[in-house]
Length: 425
Image (cartoon, rainbow, N blue to C red; front, side):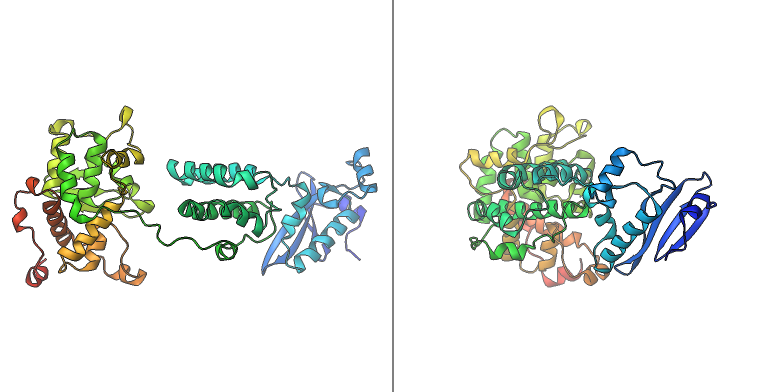
C-alpha cells in the first residue's frame, strides 16, 4: 500500500513526497505537482517523469475518459491520478527489471517511426555539421541511389539482415568499393535510428552481412602509373599549357600528397625560401595532424611557372572556376585526355615504389612519413616524434630529379644517402 493518498497529493507542500517503490510526488513552490519514478537501469539510477498530478480529475476531458475506457495506454497520458501514476510506475519498473530502457518504453507509443528514406534525411541533417561538404554529399547521394530503391519505404524498425543483404547484392560484385561504403552508411542510419528510439533490434554487423553475400574480387587499390613511365609523362605534360588542373596533377606527382590536400593548397602555406609546403591539419586526411612537405627543385619550378610574380601569390595555388577549389575529377581528366587510366592518388604508390627500389638506404618509415602515412603503434608514436624532414627532403629531391631532371639543378647529386650521411642527419 502506498504512503500517499489523494488528499495528501492535493494538500502536499513544496518538496518531495514518497509513495514507495521508487514513486515520488514533486511539488514546486508554484504548487505544480508531478510524479517521478526512480529506477535502476543497467546499474545506474534514473529518474523518469511520469506526468503531472491530476488531484481531482478536473484536468481530464471527455476524450481522455473515453480513451481510458477503450484501453488506451497510460504511457500516452500526461496528467495522472494517483492510481494511474502507481500503475504506470509499476509497468515501467517491471520493464526496467527485464533490461528494457524505461524511458524508451514510456515514449514508444508517442514516437512515429520513420521510413528508411526519412531516416536517411534525418541522419544527414544530424551528421552534416561535423562533416566536410564532400563527405555529407557522398553519404546522402550514395544511399539515395543504392539503398533507398529497396529500403526507402520500409520502416527503420522493420529492416532486418536479409533486407540489407538483398540491397547490397545488387552492387556487391559490380561496384565493390561503393558497396562497402553503402554497407557502412546503411548501418550508420540504423544505429542513428536506434539511438532515436525508432528501432529496438540490434544493428547487423558487417561480418553478418558478408556471410549472405558472394565473395568480392581481390584488389580495390588505386591504379598507379609505373614509376618508370613518370618522367616521360611529366615531360609531355610540361610542354603543354599549365592550366590549374594540369599544374595540380603534376604537383601531386612531385609531392606525393593526396588530391584533397593539393586542391586546398594555398600560397600562404608555401615557403619558397625554406622550400617547404606546411599543410595545416584542416586540409589533411582526418583533419587532425599537420604535415610538412619538402619541395624539390622541380616542385619549386612548377610553382614559379604557375605564378612567377611574388606579389600575386595569395589564395588557392590551383584555383578552379570563380576562385573555388578544383574538383577531384578535374585532375583525373588530365590523365584521361592522354589515354591514361591510372588514378591521381596512384602517384603516391609510384613515388613509394620508386623510394623502395631506388633509395633503399632511406628507412621505410621515413618514406611512409613522406606521404603522410601513420607509422608505428600508439606507444611508438607517443615517444618517437621525429619527422626526419632532412631525409624526407633527400627523398623528394631524388624523386624530383628522377621525374623532371631538366628542372633539377643538382639532380646528379640527388642520390641515396650513405650510412654515414644518415648518421649526420
